[in-house]
Image 1 (cartoon, rainbow, N blue to C red):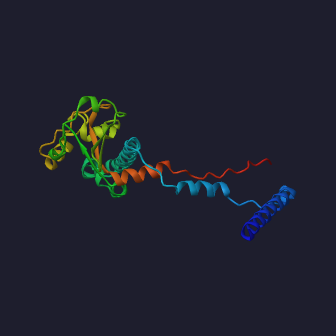
Image 2: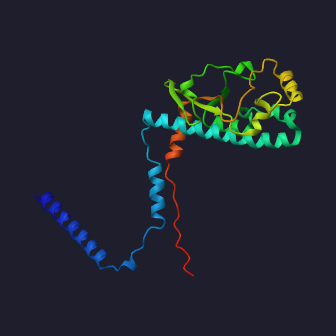
Length: 237
């Protein structure tokens, strides 16, 4: 009986304390309440730390994002590099640099994505880059081929389209776009060359990437991670 009375008394005391706390909070003015600074930013960061399950469809989306990111970066660097090389040393200076998959920055990005990138063609300059490409998979530069080769490896393919007139100096028509002396240099380095006779807008080959699941999942996490955007008040005067 004593124990019951003691518990009952304790509960009454606790309820009384809670009511007093609520009354005290209600009595406070808004300017007397101290708010937590950057609470929205803290909330976003806390949400980013929540463990989320990545579904198979999410991994396929991430495969496309990662492939597009790597190949677009490589193509941009290739255009800039070849423009400088052609202006400085002509085809002789540009020919060794037409391998964007070997550029240090592209290689570093591939390592981050756990990806192996290569360029292939049905009419390659280097016979080791020959591959069978289906017409339906290389119709336009917006076509993407994605599939899961195994539980741990994803495949990405994007067409390579000749959309820069500078490329015609090495891949156009011999005698019109390619000077005979330049073509002799190309054949000297690539005796089995078949990568000529192209025109603007024509599909030349494809980027092909193999990406490990870990890199794809990490890229999905980075792409979907919420970022805090600070909203500043506009200047009125």
